[in-house]
Amino acid sequence: MAKTLYVGNLPWQTTEEELRGTFAQYTQVISARIITDRVTGRSRGFGFVEVPDEDVEKVVQALNGTQLGGREIVVNEARPRAERE
Image 1 (cartoon, one colour):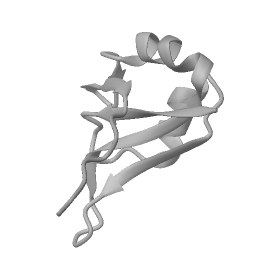
Image 2 (cartoon, helix red, strand yellow; image 1 turned 90 degrees about the vertical axis):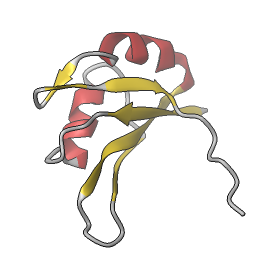
Image 3 (cartoon, helix red, strand yellow; image 1 turned 45 degrees about the vertical axis):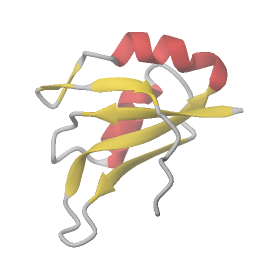
Image 4 (cartoon, helix red, strand yellow; image 1 turned 180 degrees about the horizontal axis):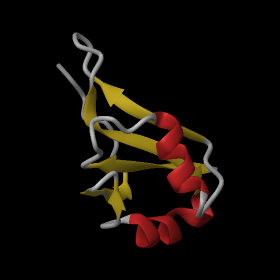
């Protein structure tokens, strides 16, 4: 099984490849995506990385609060998406 991690406070210029590479130093990366604005196509400053269940705690402890592109990133387990009306 896999779990999804939320990655916040990303620099605007961060690419999905850079995000994948950062996490790949600590675990197998199943998928990595940066969320973009629908209108402008510009990064919204956060993304999601899917990793194996057994590595979640290790990765969060290793990367939460570290520097990426000069910004201190936030890494934690993603919460389920809220229902929209």
